[in-house]
Amino acid sequence: MAQTHFGFKTVDETQKAEKVAGVFHSVAAKYDVMNDLMSGGLHRAWKAFTIARAAVRPGFKVLDIAGGTGDLARAFAKRAGPTGEVWLTDINESMLRVGRDRLIDHGVVTPTLLCDAEKIPFPSNYFDVVTVAFGLRNMTHKDAALAEMRRVIKPGGKVMVLEFSKVWQPLEKAYDTYSFKVLPWLGERIAKDAESYRYLAESIRMHPNQEALKEMMEQAGLERVEYFNLTAGVVALHVGTKY
Image (cartoon, rainbow, N blue to C red; front, side, top):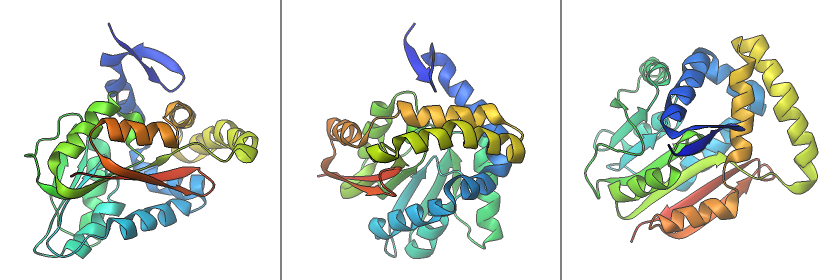
């Protein structure tokens, strides 16, 4: 049976999705609080940069994959307006429920869907923009997911991947200390779950770096792939276009 990584552990491919689901079922209720604490609020700036680069206009069709608590979908829905179509999707039901409820609390009514990014249930050439923020690294077959994202965007459309990446080398030691000491401690204190946050730190280290992810996107058929390092490479935004 094929093997893959779950953090630093090696597991059967068939087990990864279930294990990742367990992590996000556990952290869903405290996800936003932990994001603010872990990043010092910087995740909001990273998402704001992504929203600006997406340049969603009235009438756009947008798919937000692994959309979690709905930050991107909410912003896109406001920009696409009543003539647009913005879908909030996630493979994890607990996260999707939190996201749906947050959208409603903010007065945003937009469709939500339980969705596996490796099997996107939309026709080809449908969306203007597809985004995935902090979700790609948890997917078992990243290449298949990227190919599906490319399939469902229109010619001229964009696939945007916001994800943790390779930090600037002089900061690596401090970043490792923060990731493997502070994050699990915060997870235990706030979410009562140190192990899930230890996995999240490990999954970042196992994710392809900036150049490797760029190459993966190109292999999936996306062109003019570029990336933007944010906060010294802690996070990178990759953007690829379909022609």
